[in-house]
Length: 157
Image 1: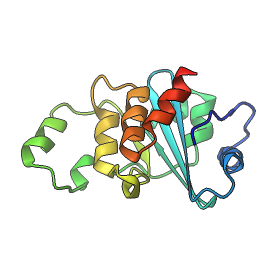
Image 2 (image 1 turned 90 degrees about the vertical axis):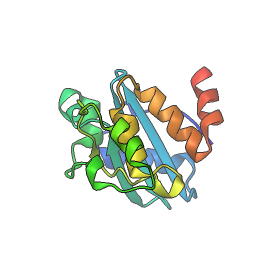
Image 3 (image 1 turned 180 degrees about the horizontal axis):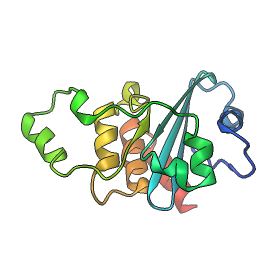
Image 4 (image 1 turned 135 degrees about the horizontal axis):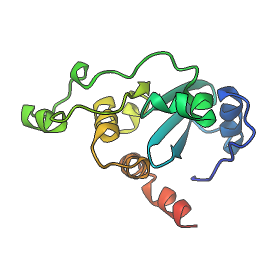
């Protein structure tokens, strides 16, 4: 199920998590994709309504807006560096993906979608890929985890 979630007036990340829980209270996994200014993406995940995990495409967002501070202000750990991740990709694919140094600083838990089919390395690559907008990253991630059509319908509504 894909639906919009109103974040207006939220006081902190816990209130946003409460709003996410209210959408489908018995969901095993709930995801919230927040896109801002065609520059920033934050993904929030709740497992069984409890385990809150957050990933942001760029730590700069926390300092540039109230929403960014609300979503990422309590996230302390930087995302894993692409060099730290290992995958089954060929060396050529890895070299192609990391030719240009990223101008963004991902923050939080890039592994939050790994069990759904989007490994940390792939999420980091999408967020640091030149020309990718947050909506493009959301679309690709949602397609990979099996809810691409629902999210596209929501965008078109």
